[in-house]
Image 1 (cartoon, rainbow, N blue to C red):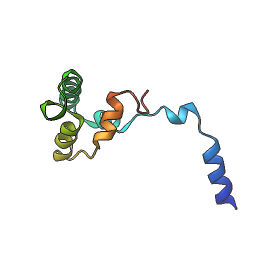
Image 2 (cartoon, rainbow, N blue to C red):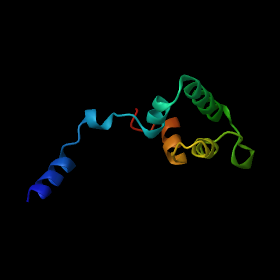
Image 3 (spheres, helix red, strand yellow):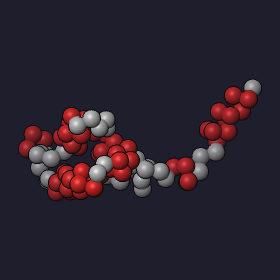
Image 4 (spheres, rainbow, N blue to C red):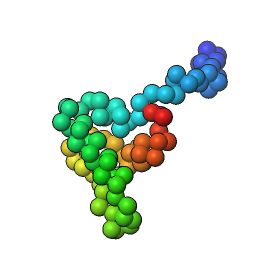
Length: 91
C-alpha cells in the first residue's frame, strides 16, 4: 500500500522547483572543459545561424549529436532541438 501512496503522491505533487532543472545539453556543457564549452556554444550558434533547409543545411541538431556522440557524449538530436527551441526544462 505504501508504494501506491508514494506513486499517487509523486503523480500529484509536481512543483515548479522540480520542473526547472537543467536539460541534458546544459548538464553536458557543465561537465565540459571551458574550451569545449565555448566550442559547443559556437556550434549551437552555427546551428541557429544556418538558415538552409534539408540537405543544404550544414549545421543541424543531427550533426551536433553525431559529433558529440563520436566523442563519448551520449545525447539525442531531440534533446538538442528542444534546448535550441527553448522547450526544454531549462526554460
